[in-house]
Length: 202
Image 1 (cartoon, rainbow, N blue to C red):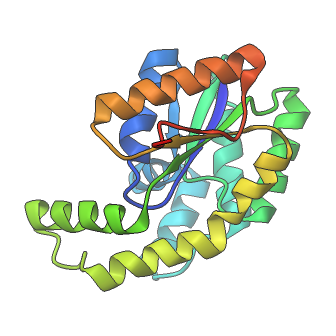
Image 2 (cartoon, one colour):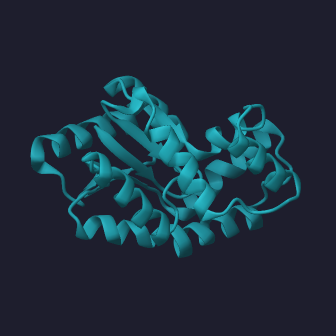
Image 3 (cartoon, one colour):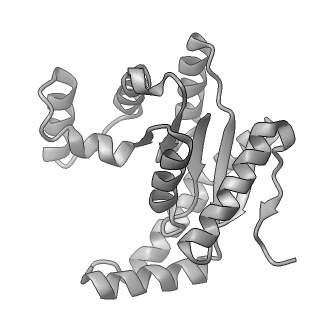
């Protein structure tokens, strides 16, 4: 199964990505994790990324695309993968489409975790208090929510138009959400994928 997982900051993507990867036996690929690994990797590309990050610069779409393409070409992705944090822009969508088309391995499902903004903000504020994250105040959290809504959420419309989007309510206990996710993905794999919001109150 070849998946993307999307959702606003605080919707639980990282937690659910790990559970999905374990459940279906596929690697969870987070661009954040890849960038962190590059801090110690001994490759020309890793050195280039380190130089950019050390200077406070922004890693370009071109480099990000190259990093993800190299990761997807590794042997553990032959039977599927889950991408978390990529693509984030229409250009990245096009690049990913081309890379997967070259290998004849198109996406199967795009999973969107939906969550009410106020509920997510409350969740993140509680986490910030518990973990001592002084920089995670309500203003910065809401800015990140707005950035997601403006820059990344529109990609959901792209995947919905292709019939790939499955939306799941991301609020609730971890096991409760993962149960919804597995049910939705199994339905989608069986050809019953839709943009219905799974788990939302009727």
